[in-house]
Length: 174
Length: 165
Image 1 (tube, rainbow over the protein chains, first blue to last red):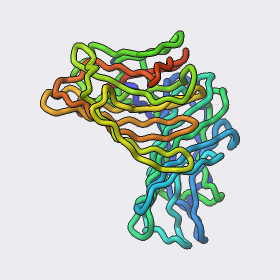
Image 2 (cartoon, rainbow over the protein chains, first blue to last red):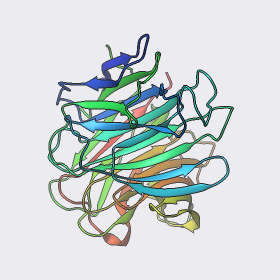
Image 3 (tube, chains in turn purple, orange):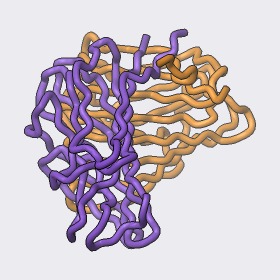
Image 4 (tube, rainbow over the protein chains, first blue to last red):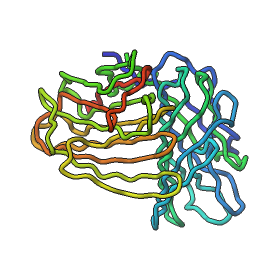
């Protein structure tokens, strides 16, 4: 049978990093999409940074349920953004191990359909300096439009540092 | 870029009307693992998706167990069911849901079979691990909602084969 795990496009942050990874004009010919991301934030001040998803140019209409383990305890929290990952950051406190990147996989079924969209996300910020995070996220986008573009951005408007990557794959069931 | 050779669609079902159970049968043993993707919704309340497996026929005996980790937006909890008649492996509500179920090393005839399941809906995120206490190869799979709730029309279920070589 046909091979059905097809790279649609990829992006790699060059020197100085990038503000976002953008996938536009996504073909509507696949059944599902898989987005895999390796990313680190350029943030140098305190606090934490995250990675958020925008669909069709919009950051609205998202909700999520997060299940999180930090090496000490497990917790769950709801949210109303397109959060898909917590990001190691370049500086500040907490201080993350150098050269470590969050690894994230997002499964987007029926992306071209006319129903509301539900996504499955696995992500981690493993590092050797401070608490690491392992997150399972159920992300919901309450829109029926087909997905034609995806953007990934820092939740604090910082850059994604050099060598951050994103790969978009199409999955076909025929 | 050319696609990888290890994510092959075996069978897909797009429900034309509400349906309680979806069965995949006569599954080839030529892959290493199986992945079942379920995208859609059910006809009423938030429910767990369960799976039963078998060789030639579905095993409906008490030969399954499941351990799970749940987040509901407030609490993280874990639980398990043993000597059960199915494996809890996914989650579905009546709006939009995604479940990903992995049947590991499904065609070997020497070990009991492990199933890894992930459920995502508007109320819960759940990771499951299940066991079928049988060494037979899996060539038949059932999936259905708990409490006899139907999958809604438009729900898509696709079974893929993953090959190591």
